[in-house]
Length: 184
Image (tube, rainbow, N blue to C red):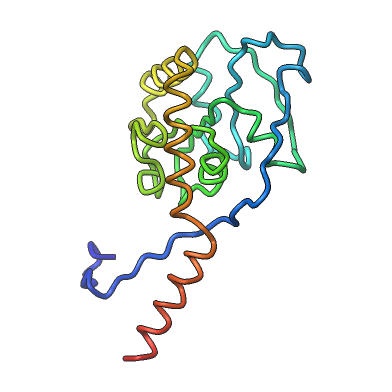
């Protein structure tokens, strides 16, 4: 909006929030379920499988064994069972599925589109790559697949970062904006 002529001091940003998880989430065992080797690194995509989600861009990344899970009703265990979240979206608002994965300790790789650069701190809570750069996306995927220590470090960073997108904080932020507007 600043680019549209609105003074930045008149803009308040309140990010969408997710509900805090009070109970630990038991990960879905994708390896056992699919008969994959115990050393397999499970990378997954979560969200609506629509054109803007960039699934078609991943065809440039070779050497993958792919399983399409379809609609998953119990999503938290499914996400928690991933080692890495891939989010190749071409366009994104904020990316609540990324926040969900981060809150479960699953580090994301995503294109730096929409609100994702606000969600993911590059190389702290996940990896951001330039929009549409499938070579860099593949390099980031390889780095996380090959380096369990990096996955763990980014997963810990992701948990911490996801806490800033808590539904309680979203509610407080929304109330603060209303209070400011109503107070003149």
